[in-house]
Image (spheres, rainbow, N blue to C red):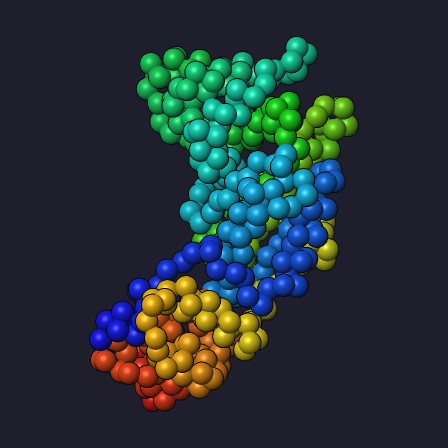
Length: 375
């Protein structure tokens, strides 16, 4: 049987889309909104930590937050620049800061950076390196080489000469100086906040050594300290707000690492970062969905892909309600990604075998064939 024989345009479980409502996250979204708006409207560098198991919806939540920020649904987001990045690649300690900065510029994109460069001129008396000034001028002229320089690409000598730089962006210290100058220029342009969303931080924790993790968190700490230094000098710089998503195990690893370093070295390590981050205030947990929310999440997808003009025995056909849905909630433990993945496997197999209706028995038999449940 084809999916159309069941009354669907296509398999309703194999497409990721932001069009679906977030089910079962009302309290979490309320807290995220409160913390983000408080950060956007106040002053300083903040970190908001989003914890959830694999497939709990961290990526979907970050994408929804990004969408809300870009459409100015949060107070203060109309004066914010948004960058959503991943830091999964392992880098030597000397390159970690450079990798972070170039990913921010890569995510902002050429067109956005050109737009920013045209928003304002550098006022007299503001201290910028000639290198950064030349990069801004080149962006204003639409030179792609300036963007490639900011994203760490290799350039020929002729290309470097054309945009007024003598060297490539190749070290952490150089990259961080450019980042701080960019923050200052954003303020001149009328922006108040730079919001950086970092997904899949757990991959970084699993690939980086303790020294590499410490180096990255030290860079985040330095961004905080630089804000304090700049404002002490009465110079303007945008706030920097981080939202970092990771698994609870990765968070536990950071806490254990901090405790171990404190015992062995009497301080230092990542302790200064955690002291500034204040996780007791800025930490949000994505819990498993209750049965009602998970069922509604699945029903949203069925309704979206249903062929409207066809009639069937019941709205969730061929999935027997509540039999199938209760089974999926139990086997997935309420984790959204698992529920959708299992439903996808079940429906795909059932269509190939022309199974007319799918209840707990049929779903269990299919998942047994994939080794997901014991036979």
